[in-house]
Length: 459
Picture 1 (cartoon, rainbow, N blue to C red):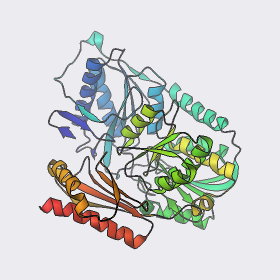
Picture 2 (picture 1 turned 60 degrees about the vertical axis):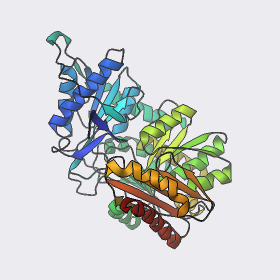
Picture 3 (picture 1 turned 90 degrees about the vertical axis):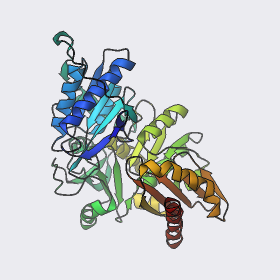
Picture 4 (picture 1 turned 180 degrees about the vertical axis):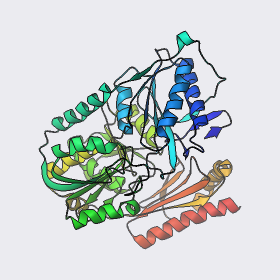
């Protein structure tokens, strides 16, 4: 959270325990640091969009940030009620704002919260903001607070127009929507009837105690959602996190698919329509996308882990599609940001074109097994340890391999199995990712990665 030179924003902002770490005191510092950043580096009218989800202290944190910004002479546009994160990014892109701040716990546990900073292009800010001395301006220079409910209407129109552009008629399927007690549920109900003829919703009511399930749409958190789908014999499950930027899908057979597999499904559609285009994925992405690329002649560009790197790389090479395994999918043109509504529309469009259930499409794809483990390691030592591992990696591996050093160390093997050793950006861990088409071999591959790390930590 605090760097020696200021406030550190990781790939998804600043996170911590509600009211202890994500506190009014921190909110004041963030607001003033953002004001300092804008006043020093921008030549504009200095307006910031501020949004908040429905976690218990989100509105109070947002209000303190607003007070810090306006007391420093920055104008603020905000909302009267909780909103999903995609709406905030949409608002930045469709206004003359210099930045946006979203107070959201996103997929975190219920007693956590976070502050995410976006730049004027809608991309996630990652880096350090200096904390200046307090710069309170005179009364005549105070920033003004505006409440723009019109932007909500514009966002809904944007989604409706996106559906119309796909020329979709509702599929005669029954689906379940699970929005994790967050504000995206209000927006899904406007959209889903245009996509599917029958739907049921669970965990829809906004509630920061998460009585139905926790926010992160992982298999362990979706057990009851999956059971609901199977008992009711539904055709598809759609599960978002609380703030609605990530979405995971469940097939009619009860398969809870990672973002890697849905990304690969969407890539099939993308490359068939745009064979010369390049898809952007982070370095920890499943090899399923490589297999699909080999089959269709598609191109892949790796980037560092996290949305800031995905968006930056997509814009750099003019890519129209990117994704990450958490269930975030990025579509090009004017709106390069993850939005679960847009993702559901894109997948529904492909399923409609194929006239197939999602389970049928996935059954045609190879099965890969993945593992994620972590080893305690002080972040202060991780850089030296990673350099030592890089220099000695060939001592552990006899097979031919490709080493990618973009963000950690990814070791690709000729059979599409891979091993990634990567230090956490926010915690005292080195993470080990592995994937193989054989479950037992994958466990051994992950154990090899753990051995490599522990050997160098103890040396």
